[in-house]
Image (cartoon, rainbow, N blue to C red; front, side):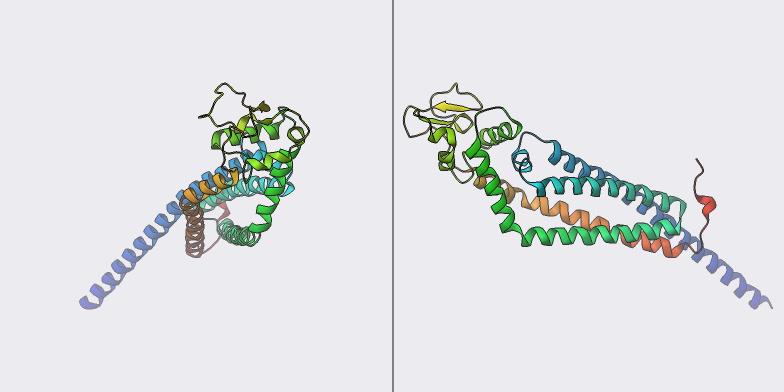
Length: 276
């Protein structure tokens, strides 16, 4: 009798211990998922901000391209939409994690899976279409230079800013500017002021418009902006790749945590949903 009672007490104690460990794991999973969703919410805000920057920026290459490229505008709207959706998803994930609502956790897992698949698809499409995208960018920038009238429009300001800050001239080289209408049809030897090499005289040139050269040997930078842009990407490709991989890992972690928590919640309890 005494030995049976002792075994029963031992079994109850072990069961209680397992239950406590199980509850501890569920609590840890819940709060890890909450923390993840908070990070995901911030990532969503960052993506939305990047999309808004592409749409509203007027002082970089993006401004030059988006003025003529419908594709870039579509990308900016997609980024804004994805960012907003990610923020909403992060909020729903936090709500589902804290209050252990299975339907929200399942919806969260499904949406996160769809976002991950969409990101992979977009990356593959960009890689496969890289030559056509490069050709389109070349055509857009060439058209800007051909029609450049020296007036302070948004696109021209952005192109002047890019050439001046990146110390480059033209897309492939300063020869691209020879197709400009004003340069071709003017009896004076003109060159774009934003291309002026700061190490060469004169030193008090304007930031935009056209300047007059003393000869046909323009005092400009010889490097094209395409080479400088590519150089910037090659220099920072490790950071860009690291950010992309980090986002993918965080999304996978969120899917694993949400599925684990969803399986641990045995039944719906809608009384946990906060009342407002």
